[in-house]
Length: 360
Image (cartoon, rainbow, N blue to C red; front, side, top):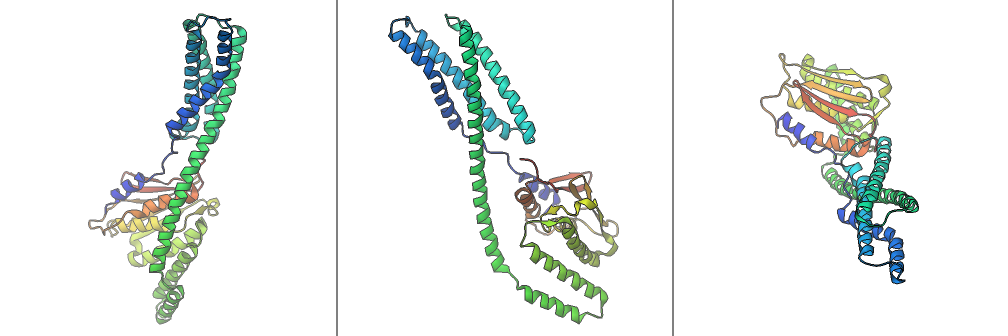
């Protein structure tokens, strides 16, 4: 399978944005609030008309429709902005998101009040008093606060539902993985006893002995790391150096891995076998020869780790599933709450591994 296919497949599996709250929910809540907020005014008008102090002549009905329509439109807009739009269309740091939401909500209320007063004076015969305008602004300010908290509750409920679905899916996947592991499990004691026996048989050959010892350390690391979701970068690099030794045994000076990582990052955590998978991908999908030696660079910039290699694609490729990079992306998204970045520019394949979790 071509490297470009792996690149396209991995990018197609990027984490999705937050799920929107259903429109029916927003409409129902908006209509209910519009009716409740306008109820005192409508009861007052109704009592006034019933007492004969006000000529009905359609004024009450027009006022009722006008107020309910405005309250409904305002309520729906605020709910949609704070429960859906700010989370499904925009990706911002939480501090910037909340700051922008406060500004937008206040601006929306000011614009609504301006339109309300202008349309009321244009459509209705009776003029608004200063007391009416003050009460109107107070009512919309209180309604805005209520809507903001309702929107936040709706957003949290939607995120919780999505989280429950993801957790349920992960449980099913874990059960499948455990079943597959049981079917293919190799007894560790048998494996290490066999490696020790092999090392004793080739003890006179220093290179073969080193190879078996490195292989034994690799398997031990794989078994131990399977019990944890994260390991330190220092542990991962020690394991990678054993893997590099095995590959160099085959390709000699046609294969190199250059490490340039800031010392303060060695205590950062990373999913186990992440670096080995990327180096293995480079070995699998590229020609390694005297004319095209493979040089893999692993270096850091800030809090991000980069793994890159030049692309000299093999003419004959073994059949691959393309799940390696997709699996790595999923592990980073679930465990580190971060997204890896995969790029292919100027005949260079690069994967960026963020060592810090993203802000949510």
